[in-house]
Amino acid sequence: MSGHPAFSIFSACIFPSPIMMSPFESKTAARRALFWIAVFALLGIALVLLYHDAEQQDSGYHYLFARWAWQNPRYLVNVWARPLFTFVYSLPSQFGYPAAKLFTVAICLATAWQTFRVAQWFGSERAELVVPLLFLQPSFFLLYPVVLTESLFALLFVIALRVHLKGRVKTGMLIASMLILIRPEGLFIAILWGIWVLFDRRDPRQWWRRIPETLLLASGMILWWAAAYLITRDPLWIKHDWPPDWQADGKANGTGPIWWYIAMLPLIVGPLLIAPFGFGLTRLLKRREQILITSSFLTIFILHSLMFSHGWFGSAGYPRYLVCVSPSIALISLAGWNDLARRQVRLPVTTARAMVTAVFALSLLICLLYFDGWQFTRDAQAVEEMRGWFRANEKPVARLICSQAYMRITLDRVPWENPAFSGNREYNLDLIRQSPGKTLIFWDEDTGPKWYRMRAEDFESAGFIRLKSQSFSLKGLLVRLPRNGFGGPRVQQMHLFYKE
Image (cartoon, rainbow, N blue to C red; front, side, top):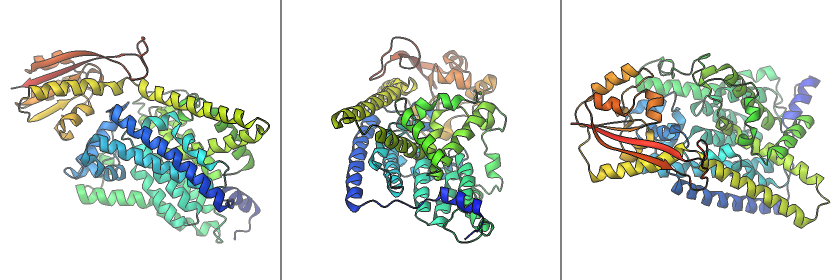
């Protein structure tokens, strides 16, 4: 055992002994947790059935990479798509986009259960409430019925955390090393994990004797490099496949103030759950409890605050990035919830239950309105209508060029058919002119001009025949605000062009 007093105090704060619960309390909490999980399982299925795409194109592109990965193995080691994510989703994606989205629902349900088990390990009161405290985070709710990387990252993170807490340190490091194969944040979590290992008071050795073992945290990166080399025969594949907008100071997606993520806390934690989260974070930091939980949240929170404020590596300031550590956010909120509950012990039981019900019901309503208010999700309705028209008036298609991922999904075409468009309009137009006969272009008047600088008239001037154009005013299922912007009608126009 390391004899340095400062080391012992610090390590004791990081690794407190678990508080044992009685078997009856544990089983009761588990039944309640499973009830919450069943509720959100049904809700997740409903969201998949009602909303056919996602709020961003990334979901569709991740699905396409996974669906066609075995036909194009380079997708399995792609830097943007991420190897482990693409590999894991490659099986459910064979059954279609809805199946892949339902797989994400299952991943989120598993994340909730694992987070509940961590709460039990810490001996938290009302451990079952960590399930709604996880799902009612608006950003987590937004992602749980779509195909994005943060959800799988959160599951692997909480599994590694639970394994580590149970004393299987090496196994925990191996699992944590795989996080880099899902999202870039895995690098920084691995560094933090190494610090946890060095200060683990359960290990009797001197801290510096543990350093060689922390190299296990590089296992995932080594595996990625080896797989990339075997598939591509390029020893520098990861460098050569690096997205051009992921530069250290590229500012590709703009910048924001250093306090941006503080302002985003209502979307990260939940507007009605900020109070328990704030109380929980303050309490845990003040008492130096659950340091693994608070340090993981603060690491990602501070990291993205710095990245977005400086425009590093294309950081876009999305609240969803914090879903990576959503289990930590839920556990912190649970600590604050219990602290507030202890302060309200004098309230009548019926009053306390009414308050809890109101908070959860309103939080769920906020999440539903937030999910429904995204305009881009509604484009799927227009895409499907245009797809239906084309099926009724079908022409032979040798190649599909489209402006949105969901267009390719509905027609079930391989992603590599699309030309390698850039932000240069003339370059893109030249690629269009070189298209062979029987090329179908499926375009919209929002994403197409914004991303590729090309509009409908450009295709006609390039020799394409306009098959159909249609304007749409797309409304949400719940949010139907009259104004333009979030929650308002989505004004969109879709086009089909064909080259004989």
